[in-house]
Image 1: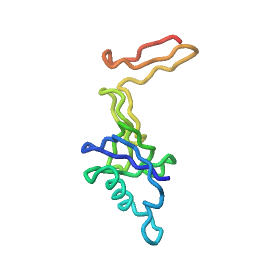
Image 2: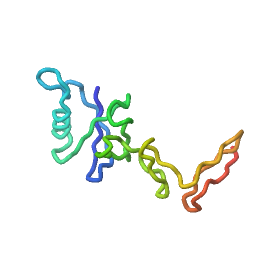
Image 3: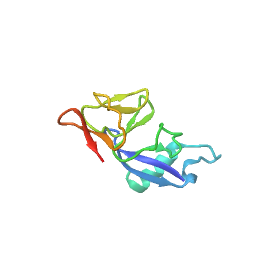
Image 4: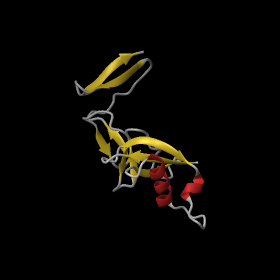
Length: 124
């Protein structure tokens, strides 16, 4: 089974759909992503846009989830931004806080507080 993410006009994932592998193959058995996208448009509407995704991360670096963004320039899925103050590390394709998280130890952990722009200590 193949997986495709529907993206909106901002390239944000709004749905992930499963498609039988046969709809990805052309007449000689070669991969044809356009054919798969046309099939999904036939099912979900001609104005929908689709990009392939994969649990094995073979397509786009990670499996796309609702809220993730397709970055056309990188050809990668970017996880949803957890907080407005965090910035994207394009090498790791991960969002990073403006202040490094303190190390947790024992029953002490830290959660980000966007209002305070700092890590808040929590005991478990």
